[in-house]
Length: 322
Image (cartoon, rainbow, N blue to C red; front, side):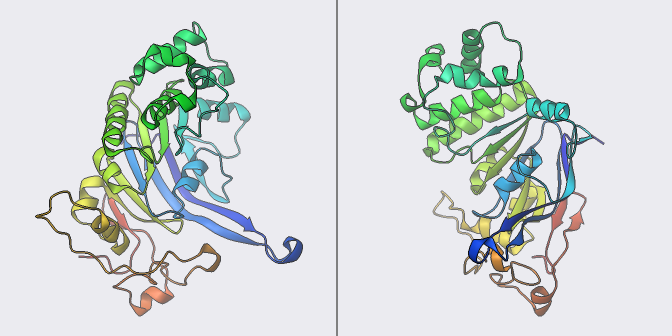
């Protein structure tokens, strides 16, 4: 069996929420709970859910950018919590993150050439010359060499995203976490960026974790999907399996809400109503029962565990859809 490139076991993240005057009465809020997942070399995992479901927090926790309250994360078989600074430096060199805002994630006062080669400087990595390294990275992502002297405000959204890809790949990482990689881009440009990421994955033997609410994105590029709701994974499995037969009502509702370009086809929509509850007042039992059309008394009283339907398909639901 292939060893996971990165693996989380029982991962949890709590934040402190102030309350009352002068912050008195503050309490710990559970943001992530009981997260266990793994990504093997060469795999793309799509992390899906509505805004506020905990996707980005999980991505940051995996890289040690958010302190974990419990659980463990291992990268290339080695634990990364509580390790020496040298181990974190190794993790930083072997992983990279693409941020949601392609233009905003680049400093307006720094040229594109300087921005995409900054990882070399931070990690003291060798390069022939900064300009040559920048031009090689620009070529890798399909941008002209003269972009080294441009600034972020001179780039379109698609060009800025390509520059972000170039920066993420500067040190040839093993794992790239992409937070909403197609956000704010025209549909045609979205396709170009996804095709570029797929091409580079094959050429550079990359693994991806793609954080998005856009199911069309993960369907196009992901091998597996993990669906999150209120800080927990509610369904996980191969992409084809999830789209062919989602077993959690929340997953099924997300898929049903995606538009179909063929007007002759129709999806049967699930009656999901209401908004995601506040983490300040989590529902008892299954947290989705306030919006689930199939909720039973057990759902309101008992929280379901993440159970295996098959060897590679898991669901957190008392009554999975048949």
